[in-house]
Structures are given as structure tokens and as C-alpha cells.
Length: 357
Image (cartoon, rainbow, N blue to C red; front, side, top):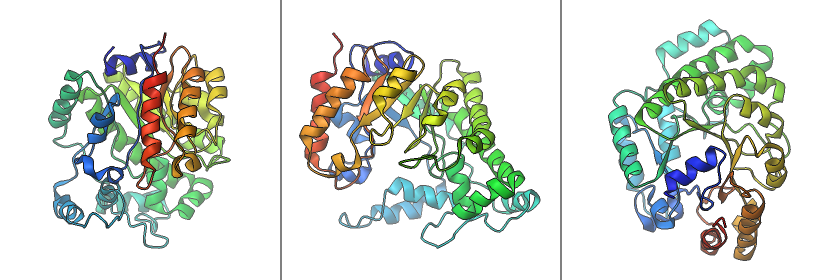
């Protein structure tokens, strides 16, 4: 099978020839590989990414980042560029670009005078060419709408400020709903650009989980986020009924997993094993949901521990990967400082244990 056939089989509830593999690298983790995305070819991962280009006014900022000495690490270029696109300044205590609005009308005025970024103009042809090139190589392609950490919840609280948005949800739900409606419309628009460009997977992100609990209660998620996320998914599937939906949230999200399935999510990520038990999730939901990640804790990845990584890869393939349903990968991003031997152990173990017989 090609990598694309393998991924689509897993996300359609079928068993492929072998377990597909993915890993989320910070580009600075392996600067010697060159351009962003080169790690996929180096390690032979099964998915590539179609990405929006930054607005033209970002050129000088990107040249500045590219000109920094290699030993100076100020954070991921992609994340810093994204913050600049949105006018977000996390180093300023209490910053919220839309923090002063107290009514939906005031918020609408602010959005009119300082609108959200416009990403979709002129992107479709370039994205379609990139997707076609990956498909010609037999690779699956995922696209994620531009966002500020996550499409709805994370972008909203960064624009309003964490404390203020938490108050909005409780005391000013109309204002919170107005902002989320704007973000939903924006996300649906950029999602449709990706779907029309031919991506196989639409990636949706929102960190709503902490290590031991959800950051907002299931009832709040159900009221403010679930219907809006469903709107985005339905918009994409109206163009391509076979579109696969990826949902990322760090931390504990088990209470809402049945409802993620209900609104059309096909695979969840990263399924951190120190937070949620991937074997139990497979037993409960494996007939309706696939799992992407599952390998390693922060401690496992942060220290030289190739034997533990290797053992976890084998165990996840034999349990979560039984009969399909697993895209095996690290459950945490491979950031600068991750021991090289852990990364090598992961990929070697997938090759050794990943074939279905």
C-alpha cells in the first residue's frame, strides 16, 4: 500500500498492510535537515501538510527570523509568525487584543476597525498544486486552518485574555458567542479552501484538556464549542463527503469523546498515555474512532530512554493497533533537546513491529 492508502484505510476503519507513522517535529529540532517539512522524507512518515502562506507584510519579519544565529532559539518560526499575523503579544502581561469590549456591539466595532487576519485570498491554486504533488508521491495530505493555537477556544481566549474569556463564558455568554461565531465563520472559510485544494484530512485543534481534567467543563464545551465545530465539519463534508477529520487536544478530554465522534471526528491526537489510557479508549471507541500518537510521556521523551520508547511502540501496535485504527506517533511534540536516540528508537521500532500479518 502507498502511505496515502494506508492512512485512508486506518481512518475508514480498515486494517492496512502496516501501522502508519507520524511525528510532530519543531523545525528547530533537526535544523540540519534544512527546510520545514524535510523530516517527513528523512523518516518516511505517511502524511504531509498543506499550509497557508503568510500575508505579504510578514516578509521582513521572516527575514529577521531567518537571519538569527542558529544558537539563538526564540521559539518556532511558524508559531512566532502566526502570533504576528494575529497581532498577539504573549509577553505582555494580561494582553488581549479584544480585551476591552464589554458588549457584543463593542466587540463588533473592534472587529470592524481591527479585523481578524484574512488568509484565504489567492491561496487555492498554490495549495492545490502542493496537494497534487504530494498525492503523486503516494502521500496523504492534511491541512489545518490558520489559527492562534486552536481554531475556536484557544484563539478566543488569546484575543480576549484568559481570565477575561473565562468570565465571558460565565457572565457574558452573548459576547463570547459573538467572538466564537466570527472565528467559526473564518475557520469554515479557510477550511473550505483546504478541502477544495484536495486535502485528505482536515486538521482541527483546540487544547481544552489539562493533565487531570478539562480546562472547561463538558457542559460549557457542549454549549459553546461543539455546535460550532460541527458547523465547520459539515461545511467541509458538503464539498467532500469522504473528508477525514482530525481533532487535536492535549490533556484529558475523555468526557467529550463520544460527542466528538457524533459530530464527525475520525481520529483524535495525541492521546497522551500519562493522561488517558489508549488501550481502554481503543476498547470503548475503536469501532468508531482512530487514534494518532499514544507513545511516551514527557519524562520518557525528555531523557535518554530508547528502551522505554521501543517497548511502548511495540505495546501500542499490539494493543491499540490491533486490526487497524492506529497512526502511531509520539504523544508529545519532538522539541529541541529531545535525545536523538529516543527518536531513532521510535522509528526503528515502528519498522520492526509495524507490519500486520
